[in-house]
Length: 78
Image (cartoon, rainbow, N blue to C red; front, side, top):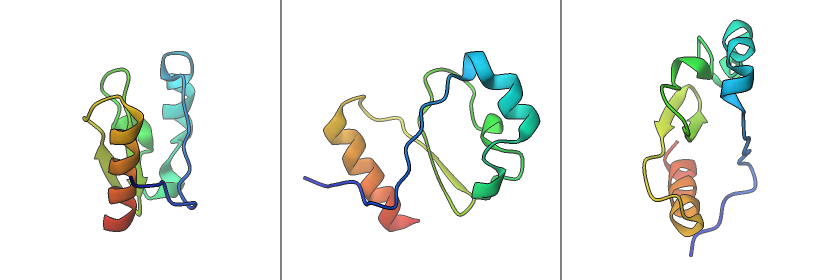
């Protein structure tokens, strides 16, 4: 089984509650996303992996083993 690398940060954002503020402050722009994460969120729930301006949308099963494997693969790829 894969493990999530220690340099991975995970955050849960209540976009329905804070979406306007996230968009206006361009949250995520420091991760290389010019307009922030709000440009990548189209529906809820959305799971994004961001690295060096690259965005990957997680579309797999909402189960821990699948998510951990995907995050570990993303960390190696980007």
